[in-house]
Image 1 (cartoon, helix red, strand yellow):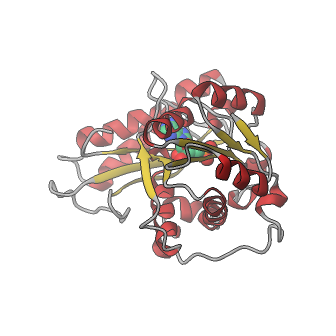
Image 2: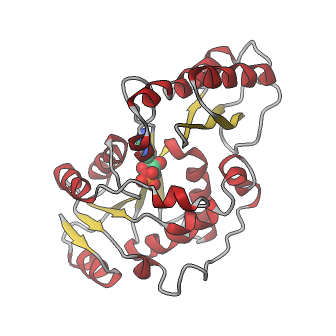
Length: 286
Ligand code: AMP
């Protein structure tokens, strides 16, 4: 695996690579786990050259403390990526990604997508995501971008970004299902900040999502949300940002269940002062 720290070297390395016909790209913020490695494996199968980036993007953190506490395990990440057969790791410094500083950001018209759910509770988060992803896409110029369903709304925002960039014809987006611990807890870099007890309690997110999945056909939506919220609070979650049931294709909220529609349930809640998110497609059991 070749490690590149500057855009110049990255571009040169890609240009020189023999297998660059189909470039697969996996952007990450590091502290890698099996979820990230599944994205790398997907890329290994579908692309001829796999590029991963590790960059903890300061502009997408609305909470400074969350940024400061973000776990960093670089040596282990490099080991895991090399073992997984990643071809190129891009490890840029902040000045490399934001040469004009962190204040000069582009604005993306994301419409209601940045007013709801994560957008509502993390002001400016998706603008930060779009800023970094556009820059990284222009540096790597991949054919396939690999994203995790774990960040459901982010997948939609990045799909919108790719349309805004007018790259829809040259970039395919491949969404990989959420990888979970055997307990049901969705793998996340932030899980490293949980105590063993909190990790056990946090499995209630998946229990609540499954509860919604099992009961949506015969329970009014408002009652379902109330009961799922109770599962979280009873398990020890301190605060709930949202428990929401939305249309899977556009994330608009659902008032009445229609058997012909596809839905997704999404949760964001705090345990041990750590904010966790998860979601479950209700129709096809993902
Ligand atoms: P992050 O490092 O958290 O920015 O995540 C980098 C990529 O990995 C994003 O596309 C995430 O959606 C994806 N990802 C994170 N956790 C998981 C998981 N448990 N299963 C599948 N993909 C994941």
